[in-house]
Length: 196
Image (cartoon, rainbow, N blue to C red; front, side):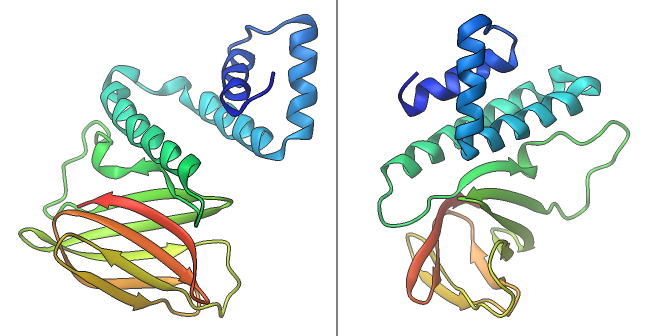
């Protein structure tokens, strides 16, 4: 039962009821000793409980899309030595609208990343064809802590500081791929990749 991948494979088997006897007891001890694994198990269990009424055929493609990006981010986080790599866990662009709901005239997008124990939320608002306003917030810091956000694309790099509640805004960003780094006291505390 050693190795990072093994414990998540065991978690999947445990949640599906495939572990029994000594393996089940051994894994339950592992859950008690590993807070990260325990939080993951709790999160996935809650998702399973909430999923009873979901029409899975409508969510299959969006789930695969988010999972693909989640695994890509996870691999990057395993290689990262200088900062915390954010791992996407929600992107509204992939989610189908509920039945009988008309799409907005202006399509906004919300994206959420887990960065260690913190959550980075980003909202994107189209302001012209091919450009967006980006508003974001990083949870987990103390009120009053100011962070600096750097968004780097192929053509430009922009920097902005947050307010006292780690809320930040970039007024205009062109469509494209970007790397976002978040600094606290000149140290990188989070980084993500995003495509607009």
